[in-house]
Length: 399
Length: 158
Image 1 (cartoon, rainbow over the protein chains, first blue to last red):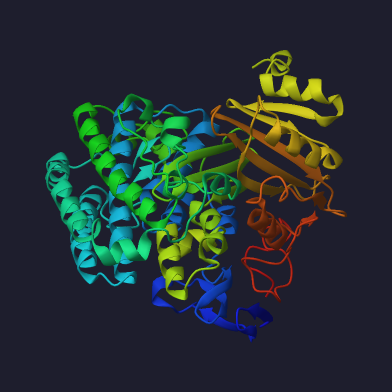
Image 2: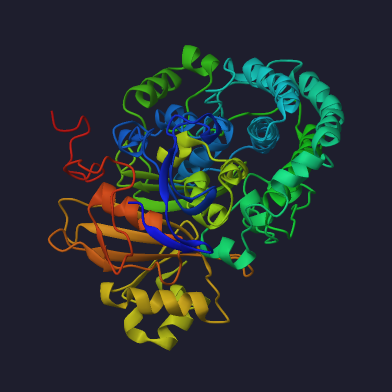
């Protein structure tokens, strides 16, 4: 595969180097085939599929509710966002309206997910570029958020807390106090990271002017999330196509115009602050009482109490958990803003109890496609920064 | 929406006005509009939708094939378009037969289609004419069959 190229001092051979699939800074099992001219990258080609587990095929053999556990495992750094995307898609096909209380709780939790995911990103990206300290701090803060998820759902990561029609369980008492503690402490911690990074000379040298993608290229390559907003395009699904009552919240879409790694870093840090703003508003809005699940007999499971005391409740419970429910035939595409960008869920129903086809439009998969555009012509060390700011999760890329 | 109202949908109306043969059928479900396009017309329609100043569907979110086996035409390929500044979504649908699952590539209109089309080829065996690099993307290169087809067993061939 190596070729001869012309350089200033004459013809030279390029060298082909495999970066990954076992490279620590590829955040999983990504392989990038690099064609090198000395230390310059002449060509970069991402090779994916090492983590392909056939999730979309598995979905077709499960009932609509069973699929939720699979969605946790797609983007394992933002399981609640995946839960939300899938649940909204199925609710759309069914034509179900989720109670406001559940909608606000969903908003609050997905925004906390965004914080947790960006914290992992800032930590791992810093470690990739040689700044160890931030990693230790950001994982400490992330753990506090995961503790909230554990308190609500029993799981730190594979939460499956959002269910079709609402939530899995009534949130336990005192959970908002825990959220309050995180909301109070997190902005101060973000300041700490910014102290360590934002004006750090090495950080600036490693990220400014590195991995530039222009706005028109980013749109053409289908980039979304901070990848697109770092290039100056203010496209955020929460604003453009509001879902789950996002139109009732006051927040700004964060953009930068440089389109380089530093711009994407700035966007993500600013997004954590915006998310905290949304969480605070949601805490005000969430009513302390009210249904956490829609009431649709035969589709949404009845309450425990009803299942134990009424014959209809018992029958519905049995039917929902043995054979599931059958939505009307049709196809929907529901997009949400996951921490990585536009997460689209396409669900096709044929009128049976199992989804006919489920497709996840994974933002990492699409964003990764522009890696050659970011890395080609730059030093091999910059490839690490480029992969880092693309913020890929291989579970989502390969599905 | 009633069937007669669908034609009043501004994008559909515009498409019909531009070229009557470009629209084979219009479907409306849960507020989402799907325009079924004849296979031969796809590239033309894509170019028109992406470049027409009053529409500007410049962002291709996703390409999703669906296998309707054993019904013919067996494959449906869905293109999810977004107009970023007009905040509108549209779905294009092309139907392909099992014996000739071939459609023109839209990589020239939306470069992001590259990997989506490779994925569709890999998992469904749909071929895209004019694609610059139509190889498998998720499955190993020497894999046999296309796993997301409905006649491919869920446990694989064992």
